Image 1 (cartoon, helix red, strand yellow):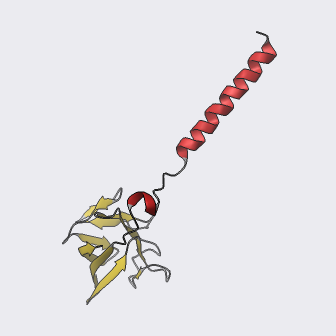
Image 2: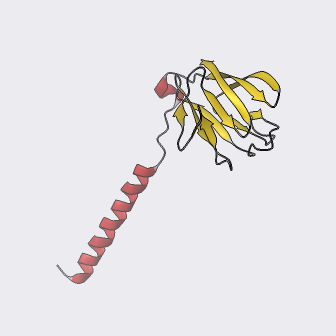
Image 3: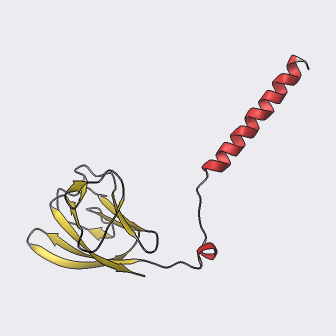
Length: 137
């Protein structure tokens, strides 16, 4: 085996490994056909903002913040434009920080990753408290 042949074989092997690595990194997406159809998860939150209180219902994924394009828009100046996000895998609802300046807190603990929420859990964003009431599909 000569050097040129070895070099071509090495380049081919590296190329093949790169293709396999890229295929392995692609997002794993389940289609509606795979999961038996899309089922939206509606969640209910009690919003305690300042001295006011209101009930909010929305569909996951749900973005909370001051920006007008958020699903739940808050007037609290301590809330980031995009502060927190609620997601669902169908039966379980999770809350995570969306890159806020002041952090998102679940039952008094700062979130480092998205965590499951249960009825009665308190989510603090700025000086606003969101109480997770529950969800339904």
